[in-house]
Length: 420
Image (cartoon, rainbow, N blue to C red):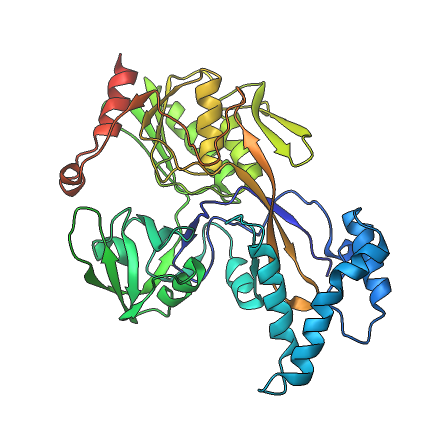
């Protein structure tokens, strides 16, 4: 089977699902960039002619000469040989050494979104973004901070029923301190089989001491979209993710809602950590009829322009978009285009600020995959999002008291704007 490289604007990935698969990364469908056959197996057996291996590297990198690369890699192979010959615990595992080398190489780039996924992680990550049943606690999370952080519990999930809230940080899992532990490793500790119990020690803003929350894992169907016609004649759509079928589901929802002639439409992107780039373009094209919706800017300064696709269902209806600190990546593409093009107002709080594009490439011999940031994206007015986020047209905060009492001031403000 010919493996393909996949491009996603992963969430927050940034938002990851505490199920059996990674959420925001996608992996299932995207833009094909190159096949794995085009990429050399750098970590070949020592018996391989290293000059030929280095030449393969040159063919891909278009960088140094074979001689320069051979000299560059001499310390690596020297270290490999020394470990193989002299390390006290023999025999050494070449496969683990190879994976560690890849992991360290990507980590040295200093980009939290560029990383290595070992085969087990990659298998878990190969789940689609919606419509699948998984086992876990049911929460979107951020693995990139000091602690694994809850972005949002899924509706009616074990995480929501246990009282976990956006912003909660996982300090310990089953009594084991997670300080300094990679977020993906912590995530792996939290997922588990249906009906099993996991004890999370939570750090919550405004609460002086960490406290324990026991969550009973369950089978969870990942949501993609929810919608309704409100009694005040305002149409409401919430997107939970930008998955493979989100564009199709959105179009169907819009057609159904617009038959009832609503006064306006609210698109809720709060706590939506992103997903596929192509889906983001599909979604924004439902609201913007033509013209630029984003730019993709590469390391060499070149740009690719993305325009809205024709045939949008809701290009005229008054529109308000809800965003907050959990709106990332693909959500920010949609919200940024709507804001810059003057198509609608943004209400809520500043978005997450995930403005980069990753390529996921499966490695040879079923050795997992690498995720590499290849570009940053900009809004139609050339606004940089990475590390900054989108500023709403109307900033509306929701207090802890509001949250506890199910008071949604952001939604109320959106309705108020549309009623005017």
